[in-house]
Length: 271
Picture (cartoon, rainbow, N blue to C red):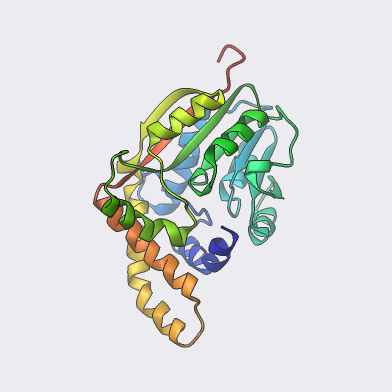
């Protein structure tokens, strides 16, 4: 995963310039007209659903370059911590705002038990190679009554054919994603770990403009990237990641995956 984000850093920086935000995730296009507003909207949506209160601690597990964590820290009266496994992202994030950033694996977080009220995972759980281990770590970190809020890509159904799985792998492999669970499969794993599902929304339609844009951007810029590859100014991994963006759009349009928001609670108080 470190290699993926290092190799694609240039692409996300260009996307950030185009979209007016260094956020590396999709936006929610509900009564908004720009990428920047859509990216702000998804943060506001997840915050409202998670019910973050003044004084509570939020952990952004898989924070990327820290756009969401720093945006939340600017308005939240409480601690905001971001975790990324990529040192370069942590360095950029620290320059971007008031949140605290640590370079560490979110599956073995260097934080004490029961220190967080909200664990925020915006397009990061998809990278976890062992989701039961990660969920157990999240349960350790959450206080009783704490919430886990997730927005991410999920397989559309459990019974995808081998051919459909192969189409997904053309996107997942270069993006350092081991596989896609269905949302229901993740719910089952989370409940086995001790979490309870409070809310589940399908955001595919409202996130679609962002998801489609990424594929279109890659398709339009791939010829230039191939020329740079011929000049040895782009790596094979960078080209593969761009082809992965195109495969992401194609598999979305083929109905192989969806974009979901899920809210869980760790039992222990009256929430």
